[in-house]
Image (cartoon, rainbow, N blue to C red; front, side, top):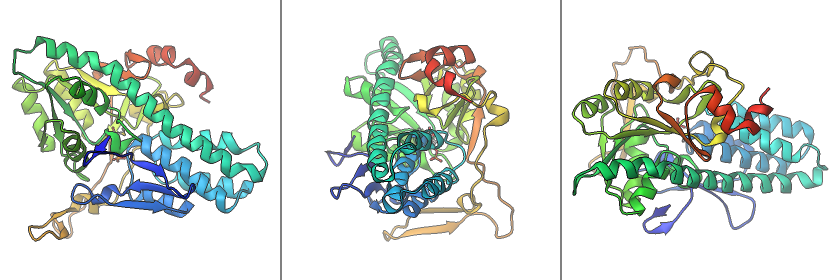
Amino acid sequence: MKVDGKAMRSIWLEPDGWSIGVINQTALPHRLVTARLTTLDEAAHAIRAMLIRGAPLIGATAAYGMCLALRADASDEALDRAYAILLATRPTAINLRWALDETLAAVRNRPRSERAAAAYRRAGEICEQDVAINTAIGRNGLPLIEAIAQRKKPGERVNVLTHCNAGWLAAVDVGTATAPIYLAHDNGIAVHVFADETRPRNQGASLTAWELGQHGVPHTVIADNTGGHLMQHGLVDIVIVGTDRVAANGDVCNKIGTYLKALAARDNSIPFYVALPSPTIDFTVANGVADIPIEERDADEVATMTGRAVDGRIETVRIVPEHSPVANYAFDVTPARLVTGLITERGIIAASRTALAGAFPDRAGTAQ
Ligand code: MRU
């Protein structure tokens, strides 16, 4: 997508042909800062500290983390160690394990001298595949927005509500939930996005708003608790969110607060769609609500807020009493029954075991 009019991705191979460039998302929206990853530890840190985040991008970064590890040491022990270190960085987004398994499979049976090159090839393919998948999600989701636009009176816009950041910053490019939105906008449909701020890390306020603004998509940032009110007053036509893991039964894990939006959408008969790239499906988890591991992060993310002060300095301030305990659950699971449909690269399907296995038999069949 475009940044200041120039095409940019969230991750790239540097001109040296081996080190990895990423956007340091912790500096957005105030500064566009890039980081260069040169070692396994730097890649693991970038994922853990959320310099990069979003399920597809976590996967792509992990794949390149394996490349960096193999460049330094291509032994079986080093390979297993890199896999374990990267897998432990974040527990919820399943694209991480998927990308690590893909990279491992590409190198495991090769001589050591060929392993790093094979890993770089597979990591590059994972990135291109992500872009192709998201482009297809955009094409498949577009008719939903077009149908709403056709019902609008002249001058009215299609209002989409989204939560967290499932845009191109969360993927390699295009984004998942944003893919149909960008396509609709590019096709001349008057689309407007309500971006939930998404406490505690504010991915909606900082990242979704930034990238929509860069692409010229009209949007409004709202406090997390606003969606239900907007829905009651007819101000939301459709909800489209991304996901970090979808269980075999269609339960959808996404950023904390997504479940509440799905409840409000159901109460107001507003369609609630989830953009789902197939690497985000976890056929090994039968029941998402019961069994998807939910990451619990540092209390400071809730107890403090970071932003730009009037003098331009970036400051972090505490907003919770010094001794109050804080809980920081990073994700929740929306039961399949609240999901109107899953927008996948193979079309829009029901959030159900039958539909998922029917659309992705290749993935369902290999799940252990
Ligand atoms: O903690 P994050 O920022 O990595 O979580 C990302 C999300 O939950 C996003 O909403 C997203 O939909 C999943 S990535 C497309």
